[in-house]
Image 1 (cartoon, rainbow, N blue to C red):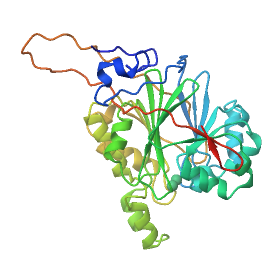
Image 2 (cartoon, protein in one colour):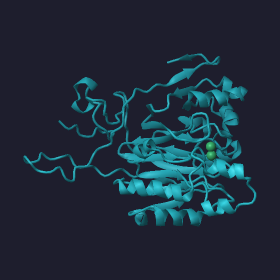
Image 3 (tube, rainbow, N blue to C red):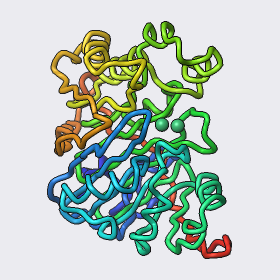
Image 4 (cartoon, rainbow, N blue to C red):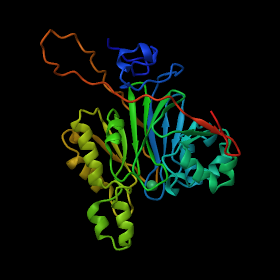
Amino acid sequence: MWHLPSPAGWCPGDTLPLATCERCVGGELLFAPRPDFRFIGGVFTLTVLGSGSAGNCALVTTDHCRILVDAGLSARQTNERLAALGVAPEQLDGVLLTHEHGDHSRALDVLCRRFRDVPIYCNALTAEILRRDSECLKKHLHWRVFTTGTDFEIKDVAVQTFAVPHDAVEPVGYMFHHGRAALGYLTDLGFATKLVHERVRHATTLLIETNHDTALLNADTKRPWSVKQRITSRHGHLSNEAAAAVVAQLLAGGAKLRRAVLGHLSRDCNRPELAIETVRTQGGEGAAELEIIVASQNESSARYVVEERPVEPAPVPEPENAGRVGEETPPRVVRRRSDLLQLDLFGASRS
Ligand SMILES: [Zn+2]
Ligand SMILES: [Zn+2]
C-alpha cells in the first residue's frame, strides 16, 4: 500500500498509527508532522536580513508564522531590517539558532528584552553557552531546547534539525517545510556530510554558505596560517567550490532545487560574482537553470517565495516481470518525536 501525501505534503504517519503503516515497518519512515500539526497554506518566504562574516540573520515566514533564523546582526540592524518588512521583534513566533558564534547570536542579548515571550529554539549545548554569558538570556523564560536530529513544528512550519561539522559546541542545519515547499538552511559547515545531503535533497530553495574563494584565501596576507587552516578545515567553512559541489551532487541526485541563495561571504576573501560564477559553472548539470543569488551583509535581500516541489506521480501497478524504471523515491527521513524541553530560570528542565 502506498500512502498519498497528506495536505502537509508528507506521508504517511500523520493519518495512520505507526504500527499499522506498512511503510513504517523497518524504521524507514517518511517525515511526517505530528497528528496535531496544522498546515494552513499560504505563501512561504525567505528574506535574508544580512549575511556575511560580520553577521547572519534571516526571516522565514508563512501567512501565519514568522521565524528568525540566527540573530547575528546588531540589535539595531535587526530591528530596522525587520521593521522594513513590517515585523516587530515581539511578533516573532520563534528565533532559531544554528550555533553560538557571535555572527549568529550577537543581537540575542539585547533583543530578548524586547521579545520576552518569543521562544528561542536551539539545542542544549548552544543554550548552555549562550545563557552562561548573559543575564537577560538566563532570565528568558521561553527556551525550546531540541535534541539535534529531531523534528518539531512552529505553527504551520515543520522544522527538521541535523548536525553539521563546524567548530561550535553543537552546530545544526535546518530544513523548513510548509506543505510541499521546502527550504534548506546550511551555514557554517566545514564540509557537507552524507546526512547533510540527505536532509536538504528535497529543498526547492537552498541557503548555502559560500564563505571564501580558495585562491583569494590562499593569497590573503591579513590572516595568519592558523586562521586559514581553521577556515579550510573540516570544521570550518564551505568555499565557493565546496558549495558548488554540494549543489552539483544535489542536482545529480534529481533534486528539485530551483534557487540557491549564497551566504556568509568573506569580505576579504570572496566576491559575489566569483561565488555565483563558481556555483554556476561547477554546480553540474542543471546549474545553468538555477536562480543564484548572493545575500548581502549590508542590506536585506528580496523576499523569495519558496516554491513547492512538483507532485511526484503515484506509482502505478506494474505488469509482472516489468522493470521498476522511473519510479521516484519519496522523502525518507527517520522520524523521531519532537523533543523540546522548556528550561526554567534555574536551568532545570521539564518537558
Ligand atoms: Zn558564521
Ligand atoms: Zn560559526
